[in-house]
Length: 212
Image (cartoon, rainbow, N blue to C red; front, side, top):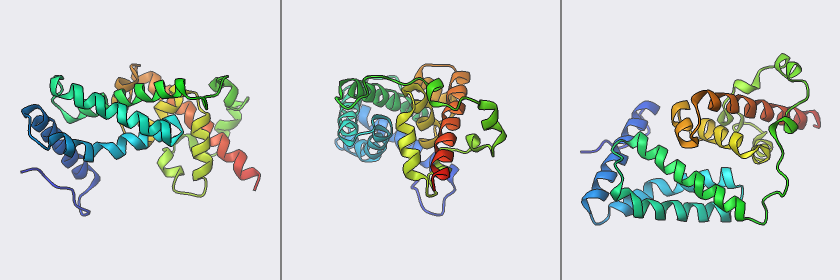
């Protein structure tokens, strides 16, 4: 009997229940249970769509990303050697990441010139460190206040590698190890990109507040 998620459960208990459910669904898909993939879609499609919006920036691209990701899952999942929910999660985000990046390259709304992070960050980083260190705050903390729209716009200004690290680690709540696996980089690279992305968000918020 699978555990169910209830409001009284801790975050850790809810996470364990979700992972158990994912693993059971994967087993059901492989065994050919009639409604297994429909139940899998119900569980993951909103997560994949939300991730696509954060990375792609446009709902139409995010919707196409979701469709491509779920189609790939439908074709490939029964034949993969994935057993654990954590590995399935990493695989799903990797497929979604690749689909979204393809959509961005095709989109007429994609900027012709891409800014580097050095162009986006403040000139004097030492000065930034002297200010209250917002760079250590996860994005979800910032999103709870009035700066939500500024944060969303700032995330879209980030070069793609930094935006991916920020979204996966701070918003999708993947571990550093899982984020590194999705992005095919080292954990140290994830930490560097995440730190610099948070610094940039802090700069954008400070600029926004100073205009009020």
